[in-house]
Length: 220
Image (cartoon, rainbow, N blue to C red):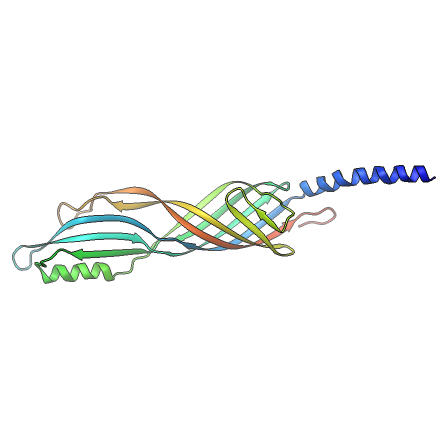
């Protein structure tokens, strides 16, 4: 009996490892993520010489130096990822990017018109805000799916915060198409020459993953 029991135990041990590994690989997983982001600011455009006429008392012309920057701001996102196995998944995300603008106006000396000086100061004092929504989809590959820290190929990482939850952080390069002014207006009241410029806005994203796994014998 002893040789038979030993052989049986050896066979069971040999079968258990690949079966357990296969169960791990074939375990479907859904991951829902809610995240917040801190976005870095960038310089958008500069017009070094914009003539501005004041025709209220004759014709007085001042020259403005105009700049527009994208301010440092916040964003938020929601995403879902489905893993059929342990590593490869498909993902979709909606990400809201805050795009606050900071405008700067400087007037060349000597100032010709008090009204023009007031207009320049008004440009600097105004607070302008905008937002853009990016909807993306694609594939993701993760390393060490069963480990405490599970890095992603897309330069992110996930840290286990408890059973069914993970904390995610990512450093992300957001490529955003923004209208930028390319030169001064020829006459007042006309739209300045402009173009769509694709700029890199880097962000630090921190989120919470809610993980639903379909294990053998029970649903998600």
